[in-house]
Structure formats: C-alpha cells, structure tokens
Length: 265
Image 1 (spheres, helix red, strand yellow):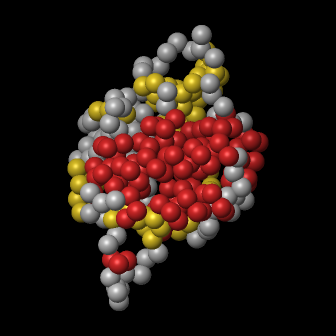
Image 2 (cartoon, helix red, strand yellow):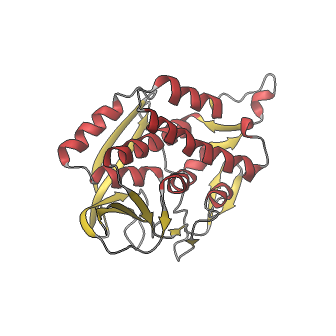
C-alpha cells in the first residue's frame, strides 16, 4: 500500500507542506507543477521554489508572491472578524474576503479537478469554522485580510493538488508540535497555539516542546485534519522518497516538515 507519512515534530504550515510534497515529485515534474499552478488563475499569485538549508538539512522553501509581495508566514494574522465593514464612512481600506468570496474564487475562477475543488473548500470550511468558534461570531462574519487570504488559498490549493497528483492510498502523521510562547495577530497577543489552531487540533495528538514560537498555523492544522487518516508513530515502510519543506524561521533544530512516501504492508 502506498503510504504517505508526515513528520510534524516542527509543526505544520501551508507553505512547508507544499514544499515537502513538491520534493516528492521528480525535478521535471516539480517545474511542470509550478508552471501549471501559476497558470491556474489565482489572482496575483506566483509560486517560486528555492533550495533552503537549515541545520545542515537541505530542503525546499516556497515563496508565494501576491502581487509581488511575500507574506510573513503568520497566516492567522490575516484571519479576523472585521466589523468595520458595517460602519458607514469607515476609514478601513483593506479589501476583505469572506467565506462566500473564497468559495466564488475556488469554484468559479480556477480550472481544477472536481475532487480537488471539494478538498480545498472543505479545508477552508475547517478554518472558517474554527475562527468563528474562537472569536464568537457567525461564519458569515469571518473575514480574511486580502494578502493573507490569497496566500492561504494558494497554500491550500497547492497542497490539495499535490496530494491528488501523488495519490497516496493512506496518509499518516506524527503528533503535532504546536510550539509555545505567544503570537501577535489581529486580535492582539495570543498564546500559542492560537485559539483557532487549538480548535482545529481538537482530537489530534499535539504537544508543546521547548521552542517558544508558533510552529503550527491554522492553515497547516486544517490541512492535517482534512487529509490525515491516522496520527501515529511512523510505521514500518519501504521508503521511496523523502521531502523536506522548510519554514522561514531558524531554530536549533531544522525548521521543516518531512514527508515520506513508500510502501507498507
């Protein structure tokens, strides 16, 4: 059986999962995937992959440029319950996307296989539901800052497309290291894991290690929740390939998600 195993001992984020999955493809297929992804029609989105070495481990780092600007990796800094849009004469100039707008982009603008479209929307529903619970507002009032929105849609779309391409028969993962300390977001300074991430991780084995930083983002947690069949130690498997998806921050340990694909009984 073709098994995919995700090592989340340094957490999980959309860009790191994308990069690790990309490394499971051979070199030509990687370039082809990036070209195809950039031609999907995601407004203003360009994916670039580059080699990255952390603590002596070589992997891939993904840059998602949105209208030429790169996000900082704190996905939930951009999910927030924006009540300004109901106030006349508000000086709030950001464009915000709600759940309906995201559905519109994914359903009407992207040329995607139907099963991938379904996966993307289900992952988004997990995020929106968690944000709604965390902040005590209806899902219809969950709004996503524009750059963060496109960044997250890009990461979720890339992961769903890559998993569809690799087609594992089963996906397993380790427990999730959420990190520690605090994280600054639209609501102020929150403990790690941020409330939305904590909601998504309900029922998933997770822990906090010695790293005082956010390691698991809401996007990363939602992708794991949607795709992982079982959270367990790595089973005995005949390894075909390993992918290392690098994060942006540097710690004493390699900041990466490692994904292994292979055959198991």
